[in-house]
Image 1: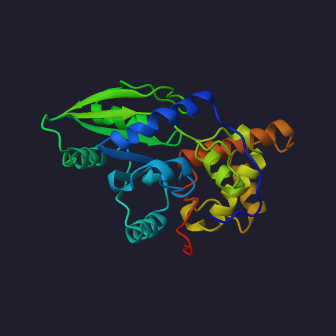
Image 2: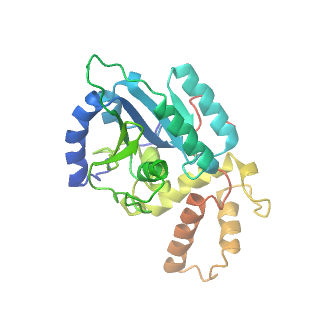
Length: 280
């Protein structure tokens, strides 16, 4: 992913460093590794630590929240990952049929072992913060056993859960990079709640969103009429019925409202990334 400029972004809670140390041996010992990413920015959610230590032969990439992404972008990404030779699923953890599909994938997995005593299949669920890891496990368990929330960092500990069928699932805290040099990637992570937006300029984060929207005008409600960033901002401002005084407080509320509406899909099905050399 190309960057227009570079800067260091430090955001590395202590529990993340501890999680990395504990996950490394589990990646080697686990039978099946499920890496959860956001379908709207598949490459931004790639983590150098995972790429370095995760055995790819045991990995399946789960691109969650596909229902919020641009369907055309989803199709392009599926072509891309097939060519890359990756095992993957584009999915929606709030869809019962999708959860059933993931369960069948896990259940049908046969780990290679030389041990005479049959042991449970150990499945490691991991990824960046707020991608839906705990939601996936709760859905598979059919009960809200694990704590989930809208902020990154809700899960703080490694937690094993018994799925039955001789399958054990491990939920893990989201692991973010110690330093993110690419500000575009950082903005995408903030837009999709893997980072708190306070860690970046809110104006920069929304600017990256507007850049993506201008490439996908057909994905937005027809009531929004715009040709560039300024007219897009004006249309969203009017739709939100914000005070025309445009005080700093009103401006911040507008940016946060726009951010929340994007996350909830109220602005339309918008993807932030497309495969390299591909556009809509």
